[in-house]
Length: 172
Image (cartoon, rainbow, N blue to C red):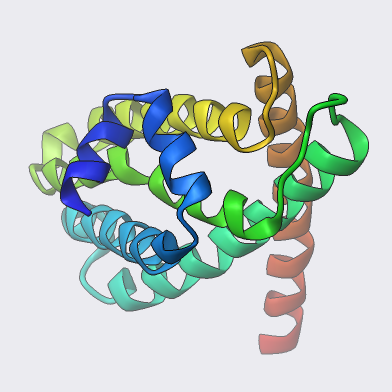
């Protein structure tokens, strides 16, 4: 699994094809998301304290699931290409591994590096996600994959804002 994470972080497109085809890699993809969010939580201790680590893992797992569903729907129903053929499991596996670069967020534990490390990790994970989407949806170019990721991100943000607002309202 760790060799796969390194290949994912190196943006190796063949790795994303490999995990797309390997139905047994779902558990590994889940663990990658957990490790990435754990690294992010530990890296943010100097800013956010220790309290949010467990909830951060839970939120990361739910976010990954929602994100995969959104990308699946947009990529296969709204913006497919003729050769596009994917199922939700393929997207869960490839998008899970695209979280591999997030492991570097642990370096954010050094207070003055937190912002920079998070910025680098976010950009790196987005690029990995574009590669994962291109491979999982069998697109012939990266532009369509970028479009799916951006549209998916906007939908995800709207969903999160509505869901977050609902949580705030219910807790009041």
